[in-house]
Length: 223
Length: 223
Image (tube, rainbow over all chains, first blue to last red; front, side):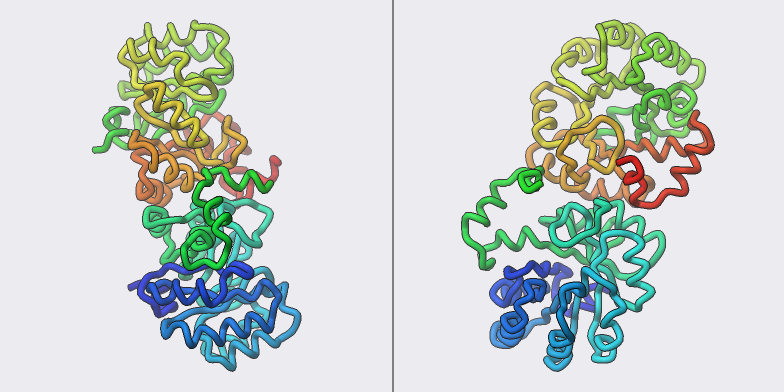
């Protein structure tokens, strides 16, 4: 048991990243049913579809799962209100000011982790009163800062300033990477690409095979 | 005890990187005398000065130390011959084809590690017959590949293809980072910037203080 696991309420401190369109009920329920922690995305901006996906989760799993709120992309309070009304217990916020909805989320008894790409963002989130951080190294995908800080450097730099619970993200694909970031001070991991390539992921097999066949510099193809 | 420590013959598997001009006898002897492993650079191209620095080491330490040979920058065989004649026991090669001098170095009983920034380079070095690898993540300084692979990803990717001993380099500054890369499969670490900022480093205090005062994104100042 560790602090992240207590917050998540699942069996393994392994979180599935909130990838737009991909992190929906099919994948998230499979991860939660396997003992990990599925997250439903809202970054696609498809508000009604995402709400429907959250409602579907009740039929697909009785295990804990979470929702991601990309703050810059929320058009109004509708999704936040929906989450509060539907008894969601765990939210990750990202891409914006963590203080924006922290009050309403905490008042609803929701555990809130904020995703950060640098130390300044981490300290801002700690000051805002979040329960933990998703620390995203430049190795990962998704919306990140310009600084391109490697995960190992970033975890250590944040750990020197705060004892807040950390979920590490970026370039982790298995238990070896998990052990390494735990040694650096993380208590959980978040994986995105690794779950995109899983059987339960809703993407085309060509996409999954592209990931499986890729080498360590695959992302250069997209630069 | 581990394989890297056996190769180095020192007390701690902590190697000081071969930084041009900086990695000379003053710093390298201090590292070796403290139980780490000092390396004398030759990447400055100052052949006679570097030879003199290597000779000075005999007066400054009775502990093991090594030499770095940046293959692309060697103008002739003079430095290689000098190393063989002076009974050097450990050489890191870098920046070039690891097979170039591996025969003459191994024939002289020298342990050879090659520095690599990607998996292809690592496999080429393994095929060339090196004793180990210095695996350099993009977090580090020095001459590196274009791929910008994070250290943690790179160690794991190489470990999936080879059991060769690994010294990890890039973004490591203390025992926490050391523990993390050991969890990923390394058996030693190499630090550069951390030693540049040490008391025994020959650089100006302004340079040392700039390092000490820097944040996790300091390198952006140089982009």
